Amino acid sequence: MKHIFKLSTFFILLISLLASAYTLKGSTKGFPKKAPEIKNLITDEGKPFSLKDYKGKVLLITYGYTQCPHVCPTITAFLKQVETQLNKRGFKGKYKIIFITVNPKDDTVDRLKEYKKTRGFNDWIFLTGSKEDLEKVWKNYNVYVKDRGTMVMEHNGHKMKHRMIDHTAKLTIIDKKGYIVEEFKSMYLPVKDIVEDVSYLIKKGD
Ligand SMILES: [Cu+2]
Image 1 (tube, rainbow, N blue to C red):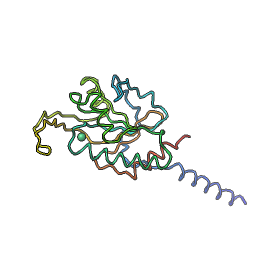
Image 2: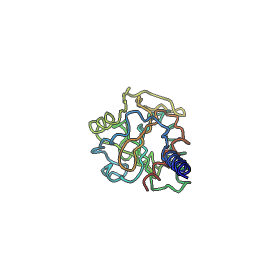
Image 3: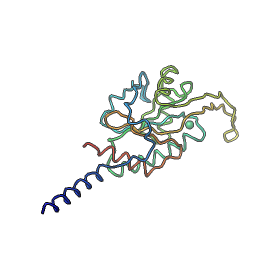
C-alpha cells in the first residue's frame, strides 16, 4: 500500500513537471530581463507611447523602416501570418505588434500612418521619435542601425531616391509582466513557433 502511494505521488509530480515544462522556441540567452523603458516615442496616431499602457498584453516588437526594400517587407509579412493565426485562436486584443522605426529622417508620424494603412497593419503600433530618443531605444534593445545614405533607384521607369539602412532583423517578445523572454533573430520568422510561444505566454498565469 505504501509502495502504491509512493508510485502515485511520483506520477503526479511527473505530470505536473511535464505540464509546467514548456520551452520557448526562440533565443532565450540573457532572458528573462525587465524590458527597458521606451521613452519619448510617438505612435502613428501622434500620441506618446509608454510600455506601461500595455501591461497584461504580450508584445511582439520588431525594428525597421518603411522604405526598406527587402528585409522589412519579409519580416512584416511573416508577422501578418502570426497575427492571423493568433486571432483565429481568439487572442485578438491579448497581444500587440509594435514596429519601431530605424529611420527618424523619413519615418514621420504621417509616413508611418500611411504605411500602416496601405499595408493593412491596422492593429499594429508604429513608433517614431527624435534620432536621440530612438538611438537610446535601439541601444537598449540591441538593435544595430547603420544609415548608408540615399541611393537613386528605378521604380517602374521612375527614378526615386531611396534611403538604405542596415539594421538588425529580429522580433523581441515581452511577456504580460513586462519582461523580455525571448527573441527570434531572423527576418525569416518561424510563424508556427511564434504562434505557439505567444499563445503560451497569453494563457500563462491567467
Ligand atoms: Cu528593413
